[in-house]
Image (cartoon, rainbow, N blue to C red):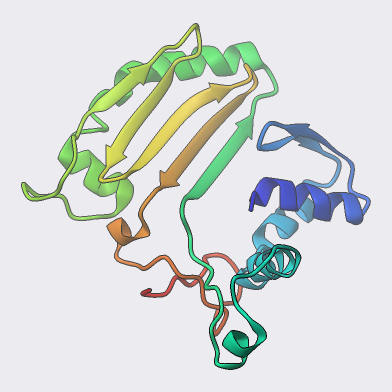
Length: 194
């Protein structure tokens, strides 16, 4: 499920005009209403999406299996959290981002990664601790890693500063992968221990 696409559908249903940006919004006539839509995404919405597809796709479970309580469980394979900031003057925004790259070279050190990811890092923590400045073509990006998760910042489509954190194993953050409805209200979702 892509939360940005979900938010775009909700905005369209409410008649809110917007200009899309890949995995985001370039502009919106009612930013407050859009923000409320984005904040309203909940575990119940994810489960509704899951249930819709579960009803449409063939199931290996027989009616007898389902009566006995066998069912699919919803779990995260990957979770990405992002923030996109549009610049009124894109050239100035890009110049600012490129000027800050040199200041960010120490972000990947263990003491800095511990602050950014909010996790304790010691000699037993697996993974490489480094900062990568990636420049494929002319689009620089800064990336740091913690276990199997990473944070990345880059200037998207020449117009927006994008910061994204990709979590490939929720256990790196002390939670399981299963998503439970019970007790879940809105973001952040309650992740269970399964």
